Image 1 (tube, rainbow, N blue to C red):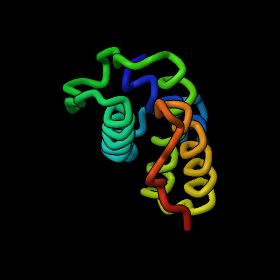
Image 2 (cartoon, rainbow, N blue to C red):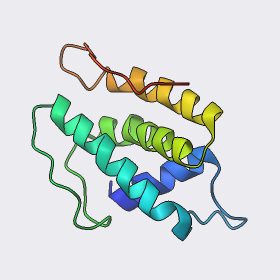
Image 3 (tube, helix red, strand yellow):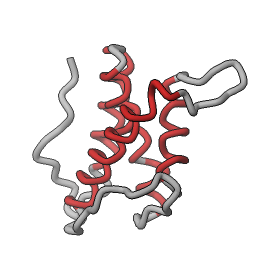
Length: 117
């Protein structure tokens, strides 16, 4: 899965697409990329791996499929929701991300969480 695909899935989860289902709105691109980098850095760190910032959103991300499809989009959605000022969706997706990333941590122990309002 590429960064572009993760961002697209995250924006679809938030309902931030136009009438044709397009999620490439320039208003959300920088916010989404920053959110993606933050979430990936968190996941890579928990797996004991080094994370290098994405040079392109078209590059395949080297993480297990379950992590990419079931965890990362929810974290990105939480940060994008916060960035656009949607507290309800931020709280909802933060809760989902915090639960799902517990499966990523080898011992299931999470010392920090994304705060929800």
